[in-house]
Length: 307
Image 1 (tube, rainbow, N blue to C red):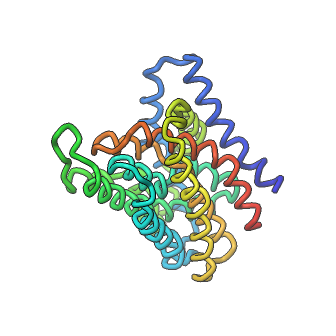
Image 2 (cartoon, rainbow, N blue to C red; image 1 turned 90 degrees about the vertical axis):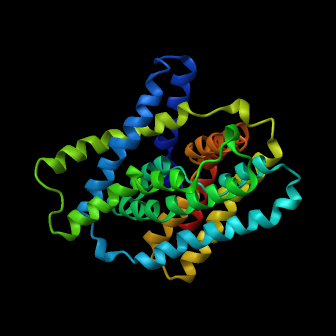
């Protein structure tokens, strides 16, 4: 337990540092969108390409890992849909609860996996991103199209929403790494070390950007819905993922990584999607903040149980 806490503590301290810097206005407001953009398009993709290019991909049971990640997400989506009549809430608020029950913050996932499991953990996390990000995006968009009114009187089409998912740098980067790996190129001279240096900047910048986006004022107004969505995301989804991983025979490392990925707080991209498509964006901000705080406790506790 102590080792896990000590490994994850720097991850959450960087999130706290970002929150403090943002609230203290120590850096200009314009810094944070730029930091987020740099991390999303350059730093984390560089880290994923370099790691995947030189990883031992033949050792990964891709099918069982994918199943242990995707099936629990589908199960949670079904459970939330079945529980909708009990929530007593409107459509836009329901879509935020739905998104909050499944969407992972990949920045925290990459940082946590690297801190705990090093390169092999990062490789498995890249696979988790490829499996889960399209899945949760499709489900989230489907819920918004079904239950939320058109944003600004105009509903975005599937094509406008799915194409950005397919061009997501965090999804494209592992595929580039796989091509380099399969082609026997691996981590090429000059380019490899260049990507390695870029990747080392990804963790601090990305995690501080997560902290800068937290909004504590949004947690209290819809406490019941925030609590329900957070409990499903931080407790129910990891439990289902653990069960699926055991049933599919994952080894200890793969099981730990998929459960770690399931314990992640909710991604800030869910707020953007809620705002674009008529969901309850303030509620979504509250769920993001609550799960980020809660994950600081649940992630080490759940991983300690696994250990």
